[in-house]
Image 1: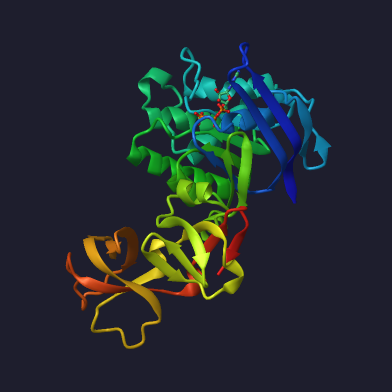
Image 2: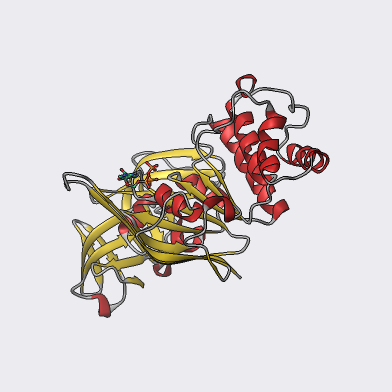
Length: 361
Ligand SMILES: Nc1ncnc2c1ncn2[C@@H]1O[C@H](COP(=O)(O)OP(=O)(O)OP(=O)(O)O)[C@@H](O)[C@H]1O
């Protein structure tokens, strides 16, 4: 079921001297009920603007927003039943934790008795039982963000919007908060739209996401789908996919400087484009072990490090550096300076033609 549908949304920011204009244009974005949906992109691409349009804090110049089948384009923010959490917790400093959470319930005219019950439950969910009487200045950054989460959750929003809520926290706290929000998403079965520029966060949290650039959505899908088939090199680079090379296909072979990859596909001949060679799609083989080796190339190991059961190689292939990640095997030792064969499976290689059309080779 579609929970939120954005259709032909446009928002313009025109600067007074017209030397800096920004246009957000979202043709069609559907977020399903129960999605943990990510809006991801580099600074200034329009993520927050889009989130605020969903919240009703910014009115688009044109287009419509539907929540299920209801057109909410002209509905006031407080009537949308959408919660929002910002990077800063924005708590009332003169109110304790209980009062901060009670504030929204009071506005909705929920009785004190019912409110106490709801607040107790939500404080338990966010791990802050016993903190009712603390004031914001007595709380850590992570605890404050838990209070702002509790304050949003207690109102049972249909959609929860989160704008880089963990970016001000240290890495350990950030991990804890990510686990907490995943638990909460599961428990409350709510739809979450979460803004981040952190690709690691995207792979941990989202079941679907949209990658944005300069006010537009470049690609939508599950993080896995997008990682597997990035539609262009911006997306590939943004997701940190290594080994992308720009070159030309001739005689079925992709050529970039001295690097040659046989694509075994004559339909690509004459095309320029980017080839994506994902580090985990190779196997580094010893020179004495090439009996069954198929496609690949020779190279020299420039660097090899061990991390969490994997070997991370940097391999010099005719003056081009290729990164390879492969499972550590106790029986095989590699050395820097060693000549090796780097094998690949042709089905894991993607060539993105210059006209942005992606082809699986
Ligand atoms: N009220 C405004 N008036 C004019 N321009 C604005 C306004 N708000 C944002 N912008 C501009 O619009 C663009 C998009 O801003 P937005 O905050 O949506 O981006 P973002 O992707 O959330 O960035 P960040 O990750 O840095 O928060 C930016 O270039 C910003 O300078």
